[in-house]
Image 1: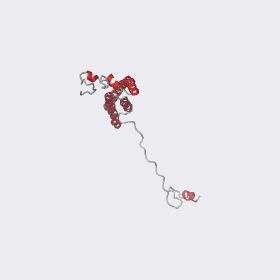
Image 2: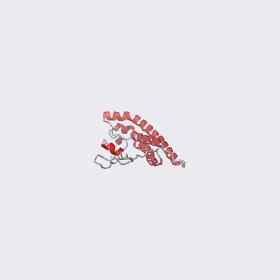
Image 3: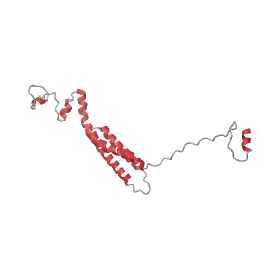
Image 4: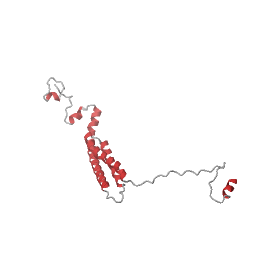
Length: 171
């Protein structure tokens, strides 16, 4: 109670004193956290990177033949399109840069969809032959189906190769 009587008797505002008579330090205020703003023009760089990945990965997946890579391309394009829709255009600008990136993201989505569909169809058509070759252990049937010579049946010798019966391409 002596502590309360000392504070109330002073008549004016004073710094509260601790138990040993030292001034009490007020508790530090929490650090100011900036309020999250909407995605601004600064996020266009990451959006452009996602669009670039989607536009490049789609055609590369057609060459390599990967459903996974085309799915990554499609996913990057969708994320870029979702992010570019949240970009707030500052007042006083016409937003041409945002519109260009939005158009590129839509092109990336188109490329990703086409690549994903074509790779999925190719996988569906080739999967029965791959499974059969894996079960039988005869992978030369995959080469025969592609119009390439398997080399195990001696067809190279009958097509103008050496007639000694070897299956070597060089004779």
